[in-house]
Image 1 (cartoon, rainbow, N blue to C red):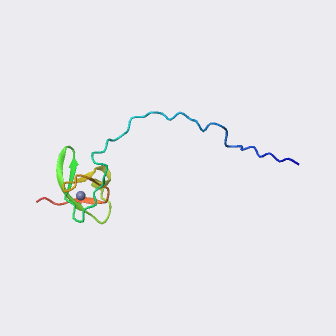
Image 2 (image 1 turned 90 degrees about the vertical axis):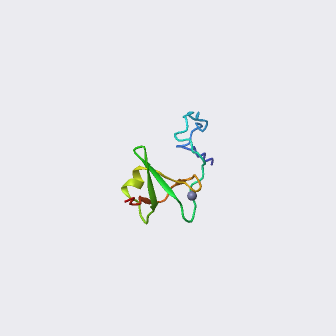
Length: 85
Ligand SMILES: [Zn+2]
């Protein structure tokens, strides 16, 4: 008794041509910041603002990206604007 299992969902379309989409964001260094005490700068509306690590995501950190001046990497963790006053 032969029981051929047709792979129902898997047809031979594995060779899907990958669309050559341009990379969305060229990364400058490709390395996220891992400094113990990062010196953060957040560019908001074209203006650099001093920032500091925060315990949780802030509205600014969701919308904007901070980068570290010490290592030049992007800071992926929560940050907040440090009150420059
Ligand atoms: Zn850094």
